[in-house]
Length: 264
Image (tube, rainbow, N blue to C red):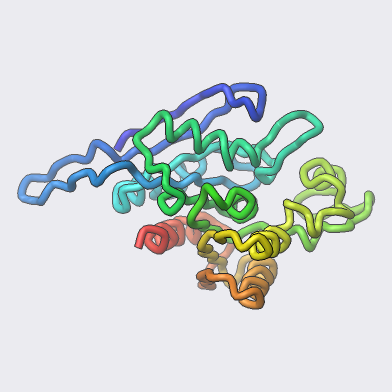
């Protein structure tokens, strides 16, 4: 297992950005066990952290190294800061374009990765779960599968809020800054339901989706809402509820289950 921390100049951000990478291309051969042979370019997943986190979270709090080796998949963990992996056109910081295009192109050039859509996944937790769904759908020509854990699917919740709004996590100025005009949020390319409808209208391939959320998670209602929407639109997906809260115990368990589903 090779572990990299990389800095590269991202044109989408107009500055250097950092990401961590796991590349399972140097496996230890155990005497008496059959050696695993490389089977061509690696599959890859772009794994997104949650609100108030960074590119170290998945390495620090989960067994992602073990999972990367087990499923022979390259893992890339960028930092989305607290921008929900959306483009900020006012300051020229295109987090969505970074995740959906530039980082994929850069890592494919740098590492021995498959360039096939069906071998390229995006995943995340909480804010990163939203980012995985939104960018997996917006850049659906890139990603064949989406893994979304305890996703912060808050677009219906914050659409149309007024300037005096103060929520438990953030207030109106924050949401206005990150999501833009909140009166125009629903139906925009920041709205997962609108993205699904758009893909269906264009008869484009929709990435396969895996969603998981804890039954005691404060975002359970939002995750059920998207699941019910996907059922109503006959969109292929897997939805799992299990005992758990919004924590690393749940995400550590379900990132492995999600990758088992993605690589089956």
